[in-house]
View 1 (cartoon, rainbow, N blue to C red):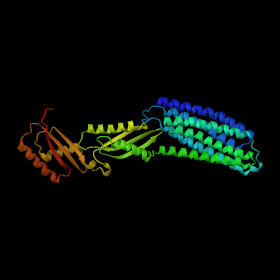
View 2: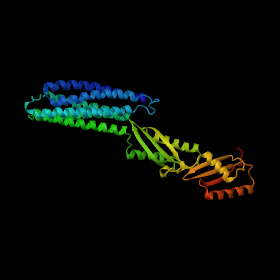
View 3: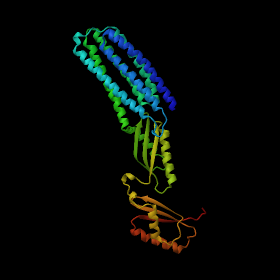
View 4: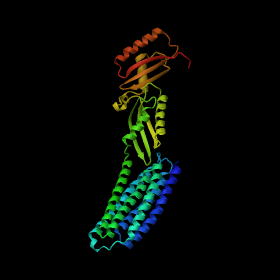
Length: 378
């Protein structure tokens, strides 16, 4: 899938390069001959698209590389960085056009008349750019690549600017000499706006802005409805080019085994991957309780200290327990003690239960101690 995505991205970008080179040459030649400031401005816009295509070719190649030790999540950020560069490049190009067109408008009285060839060039560019936009956008959306989508919209911005150029040239041909310069100013403003829009989208991704509320809700539903998940909190998302990274805390029954809790987490992870193709990976943390309310258990002693304390509470002379399971819940620990099968004296069991009851009354650590005895063979 990665190779197919890379090949398609390269193919549509090379098509864009060929079209943009041909249009730039045509616009510059006709613009100078026909004395059209707006057509020359549009040529600069198209020229910037060639530079943008070069960034896209590089980023598409790097972004297709497999994950490695230095980039464990892959190289998708190359696409994001390229989108930022493309946006800034576009905004800078638009700013230059605005400055030049404003100067032209101030000296409009000495400007030569615009030739009719500029109108034909603008109309041809409009048709070519609109066709290129539709072709590129269809492929970019299928590949779910923000970088390729941004590059496609560059072509649409060119098409719209060519429409404005045609209107400005038409006005100039009708005797409104200022129309061509005004059209160039409008084109420049449109280019600046498009560039800043794409740059801001890339910046939002680079600072790990989360998904939309609807997208997060869909992922939340996939996790929350997983069998065994009792609660869900700290669901966080972030984009990496065309993919999404997710991490979440799930609450499970505090008395199930570690392996069962792990299975619940893996089930939740797989449900998200299956239901949301754009998700690259899901990190699921298993909680026995909602740690948003605090994590008092971290202040309780570790297992070795608690087992020693437990033997002291009950009776150091008791036979060795087969197994002791500790549950850290809230500010207390619950212990499940598994006695050997030969510990069957009822009087001893009763005495042990009484010691437990007395010990729990004022013990600072244990909130419950339960006795269990194995009857069947191991």
